Length: 309
Image (cartoon, rainbow, N blue to C red; front, side, top):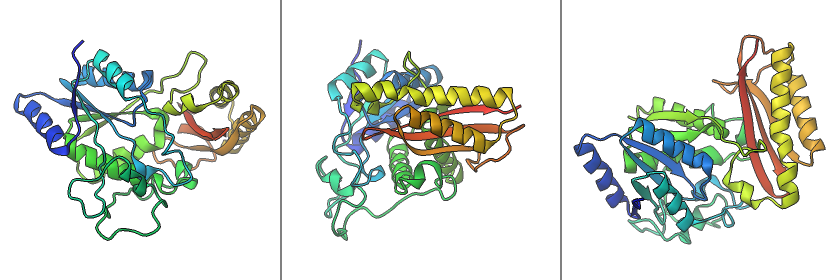
């Protein structure tokens, strides 16, 4: 089991990728925020199957968090993450201390300084700090953006930076973060980025809970309660396929099941799986039912997509 090469600096990561290209190799990229689970490993496996060399990144991106969210307590497990990536055959791991310029520094800042990039954390903006952002207008509205309006600007910006640094041929994303996948697809298309964006199926625990790094933050009781999300989504899909259900009925059904299961619903939306626009009538449409709900202080997301008869 060969350990992956670990790069902390942008120039070193880019040099590695360009050397692989000179050797005629294709690069598959798996961007992560660490605390890796089998869902991440499935992305690495797909990258290995489709590309010659796999690069992963581990970076908790501050600009997709607001000051009242969990940036400071987001779970971290660097040594275990590197072990898992080695076992999965990852060739290189990019682990920058920071990807944002702060206080006039030309090389970024320390990981502790990244906290100042959390949305709303700084009292006043430093005129020399990072100020360039990437956004996708329409797909970034609704769903997760309703309660996290800062989120996709942070995601698009950091993914753009990572693509420029790693220069991959293909990048692999889990469809649990369905809106994020669609947003990144559109960003890549609109900006003519030479990256193939691959959306991979949701990986679930044996009991149905969608795999997420945040699952580790659930109490024992909330971990059990959270199973109501996947159950509600499965029942709603079965209902929609078996009967001519309308969107409002499905929304009410899922929201009621999650509330009865002990969750606090952030949103339940029934939308077109491509445009992410709300649907009313479903027949003949590719449908996405997307959910975000809190169990304790932990916010979980999940979804199911299907073609309505």
